[in-house]
Length: 263
Image (cartoon, rainbow, N blue to C red):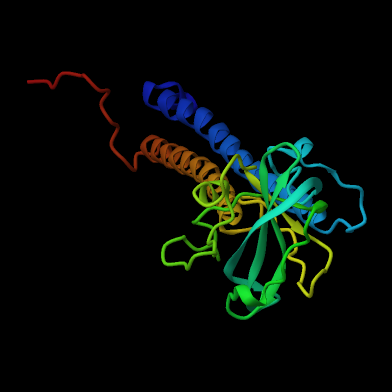
């Protein structure tokens, strides 16, 4: 009764199932791995952001380029503060306000943006305290450059002079002369009446919509694998039932394909 499994038609079905199921399981496992990677990177980024302020900082250059392992780490740099800018429409603890950002020209000759803190209300240069003069050593949480597509980050168009929408070297290149680090620091200790800005997890590492899309795709691939097996079993049962009914005389026997009709 089961000889039909050796026919060309069923050979094709069996090969499809033998290849399709492992492929679906592989893709489901891969998507699950992507989700787990995002969970791990989110935990690591959160742990970096929650590091105590008195933890030993590493030199800025040793932590570059910024990745999921170095984002949020405490970095130190020495130099002199220069031009000061405001970053409007930044929310902290549910309140609207702005960042006070000052460029630090380091001993290496490159400048790095330093967010010295946050103030509530509309951006106002008169309210922003001046940066310390002379040579300073700055310690802050390392952050990757922002991009205009990030939630809460605004484009440069329409901003008054002295304000910055996106904290990134690409945005600062036309404002600040000289070489720039493709990163920025946020000071974690309160000073001059400013509220410290907590470090944020790097892009594409949090438990965002993309992470749960990976989890959803995981379920879809496993469902596809189960569907392939279900359809194989359904076709198999239908074939067996058809052969049984034929042998019992309930259905006419099917002529082998290619048999010539008798005149």
